[in-house]
Amino acid sequence: MRLDKLLGHTGWGTRKELKELCKSGQVTINGDICRDSGRKVDPQEDVVSVGGQVVSYEEYIYLMLYKPAGVVSATEDNVSKTVIDLLPRQYQGSRLFPVGRLDKDTTGLLLLTNDGTWAHGITSPKKHRAKHYQAVVEGHIPADLGERFASGIVLDDGLHCLPAEARQTGDHTIAVVVEEGKFHQVKRMCAAVGLTVTKLHRSSIGQVALDERLQPGEFRPLTEDERNSLSL
Ligand code: URA
Image (cartoon, rainbow, N blue to C red):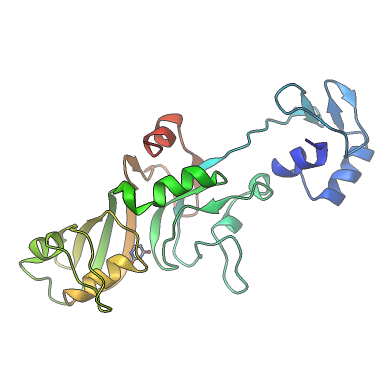
């Protein structure tokens, strides 16, 4: 792999910036200064450093983000800030993308990766992965809410949802568990029972729960166990 590709992937700058960085003599390969940003390196064998700091290269990255309200689950957007914009520069060259989507106003657990195969395994409808949501709702919460979700809600456009779980948790709050990821699914399921969702938060996907130590906008890498639990 070219040196500038490795450094770009790990957030050290654009191709042009990396050319300058190398020229300035700050980059070493196995202890020797390398002024040519196009030099070929073996990420598994060669030790690349910038200003004495060893660059650790991992092809695939897996993060959990506490998505705040007001940012879109996309890699680029002409109008709004994206979830990728929340990440530090180190991750900007890594081609990360969100695994599935949360609406702009929805908060909570969003996974980010650059591993397309892993992401596909999570979003695949065949996997039936439980996703837990908490919603603040307007309207009268029906007494048979649980039964109606369990028997499979039919959405406004006639689409049949798989059986899901819902229960009232407060005067204006409900908890919902769904295994699918249809567009605006939770909001539309709630609408089908006469409820308007005013706030929506996702707390888990499969075995992976949003880390309670994270604040909105913060992220951390997934542990190996978390990553593997979603690969099954
Ligand atoms: N269901 C919704 O309606 N919105 C989300 O963001 C996630 C699930």
